[in-house]
Image (cartoon, rainbow, N blue to C red; front, side, top):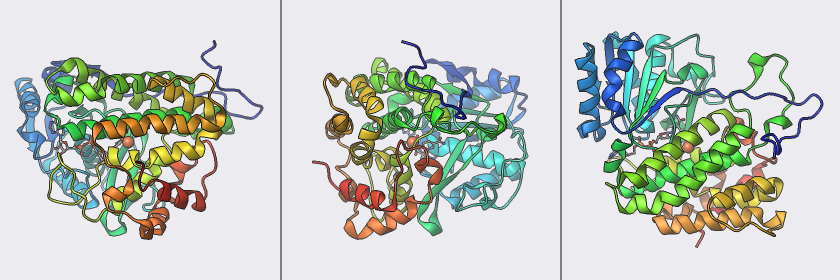
Length: 435
Ligand SMILES: NC(=O)c1ccc[n+]([C@@H]2O[C@H](COP(=O)([O-])OP(=O)(O)OC[C@H]3O[C@@H](n4cnc5c(N)ncnc54)[C@H](O)[C@@H]3O)[C@@H](O)[C@H]2O)c1
Ligand SMILES: [Fe+2]
């Protein structure tokens, strides 16, 4: 089988895809080399970003020691807000601007890595917050040029923020999540040290695993890159190009690894033989979705996270209501597979097969259902919420959820079929309760 077999080139259609990825270093103990890596990138005065909980972990102490042993000046910013907001991005940027740093290190989950990216951006090219923020919330002006070097060291494994050019935050006033998306935001290096994962609480492991699943499944089932018209010049090729042969292989393997290890990883925190494959899967899916893009479940998740009233999940800080990212995505996902499955049956079945389903003799009309059943089974086994109702939403919220999802055009456009306002309303209704 040719690697291009699922992608049919058409006259005038896109004929090429680009795989862009951050340089990544992976291995237990790799964090101890960060001093040499920072020096090689020309850093002399480093801002080390983390959050108050991760700041107490050995991982941060090891990174700071390695940086100082290499002769670098290090200041620690440990005030990153988990599930960051416009307010916390601005506070991080102010620290960066005042400190006159020439390099950034982030040690933490997506919240920390995204805050460091935004801080680096606004310290390098000062502007109002909305200047670089995605349309329609912000002005989406392109980042003017390269940022200062940034080494991202994930202590979770789901977001793949170490490989992406995205920084996501909650715009409090508008009650919706949005972000900044530009290639220049990609860190210069990612250091993935699986030893960091042993202290992750079980539900944070589950939320991260479902984020990886969602990145991988949405990449696989996205509109194939060959269905876009060819760009007039190569520079106009979008960062999110749609499903492509590389993302297909990387994402199928990521799904298989997560499905095979997730339950054991939740039960045995110290057993790296179960947690290390999760971090590898997150990296594979990250490179895959960073080039292909996610679609409907992620588009819906920004509304689900933004409109939260009083959900306080176990394992996250209790100082404000929040729906953690992986949970805000997966609660929508089975309803989406059921709707769009018939439009992209082969890729939905490929994902279900990677989760262990027997896909022989399944008609196209049932492809989404087969995948939905697999994912719902894993949601139940890992104790994540049973749909939007458990997060505090009801039918009266559907219009507000839909209003905040429709603007996510960049994501909705790479779904394998058109998604109307009516479709979104029905999807939110169908996501209320699964079992
Ligand atoms: N930039 C991107 O490409 C991208 C992609 C997906 C999600 N995101 C964003 O990332 C954020 C979510 O990131 P996340 O899921 O990595 O979690 P997180 O950074 O929000 O952390 C979750 C919780 O786990 C704690 N924690 C982190 N590492 C730990 C460890 N090793 N041991 C013990 N506790 C630990 C944190 O203190 C926090 O309480 C959201 O804001 C989401 O929107 C960004
Ligand atoms: Fe995600």
